[in-house]
Image 1 (cartoon, rainbow, N blue to C red):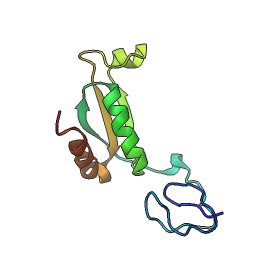
Image 2: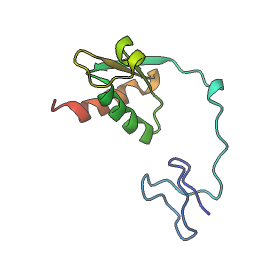
Image 3: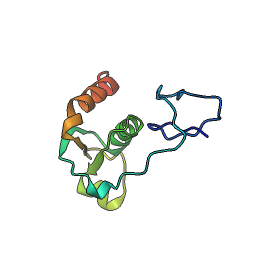
Image 4: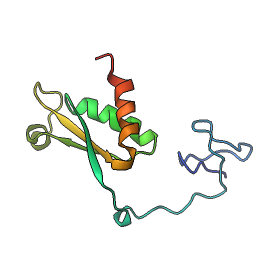
Length: 112
């Protein structure tokens, strides 16, 4: 069965290109990368008003293959709360993808 190297979805034999991202399908997925061997310089994006917004952004980044880390204030992290007034969350992204990520956040939240 063919696989998409980007989305990692499996397709039936008759399909040659991924319907989601347009990548050419491969007969076999490439081996997984050992993340502990990758050195990433993380850079914080703008602070978001709560973890719910951050999780929405992280989901978009994940779909685009952008690694990210979500860090909440102590209160929400320690007590597992979400959406409390005054609670803030910061997303960290690789420095080399920072501008791309800023643009994504602007497109998502420029109407707020």
